[in-house]
Amino acid sequence: MTDTPILKPLKTWSHLATRRRKPSEYEIVSTNLHYTTDNPDAPFELSRDLPISQWFLQNRNASPVHHPDWNAFRDPDEMVYRTYNMLQDGAETYVNGLLGQFSARGHDAMLETSWATTLARLYTPLRYLFHTLQMGSAYLVQIAPSSTISNCAVYQSADSLRWLTHTAYRTRELAQSFPELGFATAERQAWEEDAAWQGFRELVEKALVAYDWAENFTAFNLVVRPAVEEAILRGLGQSGRHNGDTLLGMLCDAQLADTQRHRRWTAALVQMALTQEGNQEVLKGWIAKWEPLADAAIDAYCAALPDAPDAGSQARSAVRALRSILGL
Picture 1 (spheres, rainbow, N blue to C red):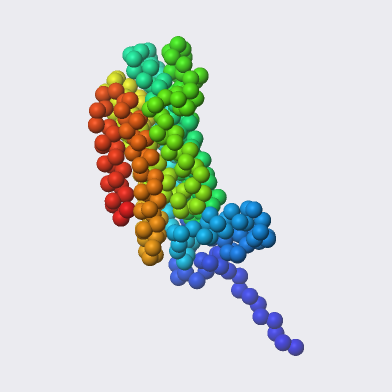
Picture 2 (cartoon, rainbow, N blue to C red):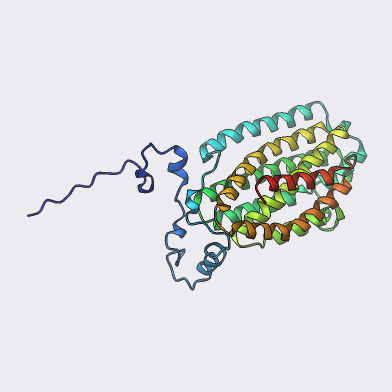
């Protein structure tokens, strides 16, 4: 009778067990979570002829941007659900404090009607744009080739939702102070018809059907988001300060704080992709495809901003500088 070997239980997940150090919380809860990547030929462990399997085979597995091990990607901030909530609980406390303090001092009653009209045209319709940013990130969550990429996109999507709720809150406050200006009722018409928004509307509606995972990432994180951040969050915030709307400037600054984290993980993923031959050319090709739409969107929006004559050129320069640093 042979002795049956007794297997020693692992102290952590098998893919982390060979490391010589104790895995971090981030590694334990974030890495190698996508079961759809276990079998490259059958993403859902079902027939590859199923439409959902074909979708992932085409838009993830067959992407022209390639790497032998996307699971090796790591978020520079090593964000997990627990730490994200801790971080953004503080951020929301800050924003709520801003809203409460400015409301208590009658901020909206001190705004000029001409500026309030600008807000109805150029600020509160942002709810539509922020929602498209949320949807773009949410798609990347589903289609990304590794869970560590998906996790970054999850938190980015949540940030877009936070920005949307801030804007919705201000929309209701402004509607109470200026009921005659169409706050909370006219934003859809502005989004669909106002010349200031048509560049961004075309850009994001087309970006939302960039189904290849890497093109989605390129379109949104390297083109759309930087354009929104520089032209709207920065440009509109500065315009607000020039027109006595310090609250808007501070809200935009709070949202820009989130973008620094977004840019860090974006840069890390680009750097990882650029280690593989051919990826740089693909990424540059996609940027060349989306950049003209973004430039047109920036120009159309910034041309409508009062007291911000150089906002458009400054935004374009900032966006190009960001991509130049990344080697793109």
